Length: 258
Image 1 (cartoon, one colour):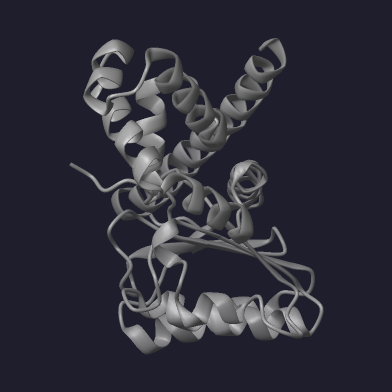
Image 2: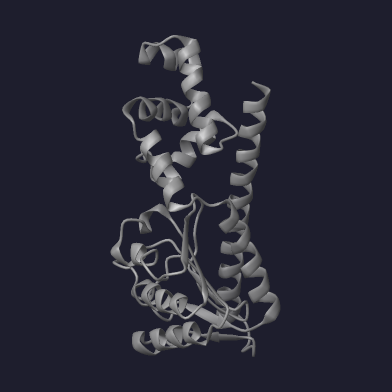
């Protein structure tokens, strides 16, 4: 039991780290965009063009300029975001010329043809799934970053910066989130495990905050059996509490919101 507890704690620590990194990245993006909008003109920040084509052309140029690495984080699929529809195929091409490409996305992005093409033959792209709040950002060679504020995925809703401190900070935060995120295979395995009817019933009661005794009674299983199911789910999710397990399952799209 001590080994299981230690493993669960380690997984929980990793999840806490990714959530903290994503929160900090979100705050940095929001602060940077807000700073540009409300403050005086700054050399280190420039707005994205307000018209779609010039904005997308700028995105293409940033990707084409990358020689070593590209990191893209996105919460939305190509169907919902013109920028993502451009970025993903361009990054796939960049990987074929030797650029290291990483894509951090939410579960909503999985299943789209553009995303899975990143993992196709001849591509060196790497994709991971985060359960936290993912903001849209693009970083090239830890040299230039394009950032968009929350709910502003249309072109023109963000800024581009070459400020070394800002780009480096964002790159480090996304790297932390990346290290704690799930591979597509890992996400699929977790999905298969937690979408089973029994697991779904347990998760619903964890999210509702029911006591073990009440939940076991509703599910008509022994208290020992119910607690074993809970331990398995918490370990799989890396959750530190029963309620947290329910919340994380929702964040990962593995349990429908109430």
